[in-house]
Image (cartoon, rainbow, N blue to C red; front, side, top):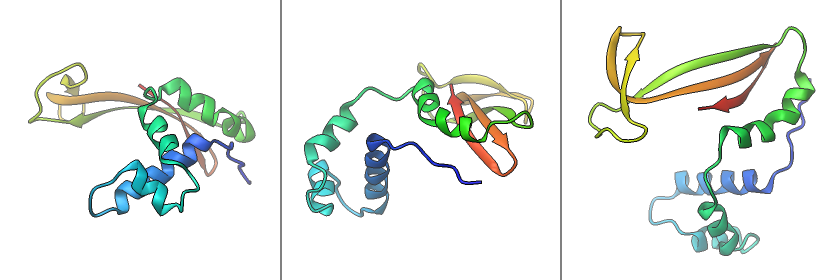
Length: 130
């Protein structure tokens, strides 16, 4: 089964930026990434992407929906997973608080999040995060 991902410049640009950050050993800048790409993508375009509003679960769904439609069937399943990213040394704030951890049976300080994954045969696609 071949899945054809949607074309999305921002996703490609974001991938390039993440790769650039991971592979760099020193200071990183939009100008530096643009220079590394021989000017094919302007530093202004990179800056606009980084200054854009944060992506939401709806943005993820709109991006992945065409892929889900390519593979969906009655034997597909929706997998929901609630997780806690432990942050014991971080001050409480809007996203870091105390949550019941069912793996330990105790309350822990951290970030509680829910992920949704569509799975069919050998294909798993993330479709939501909250």
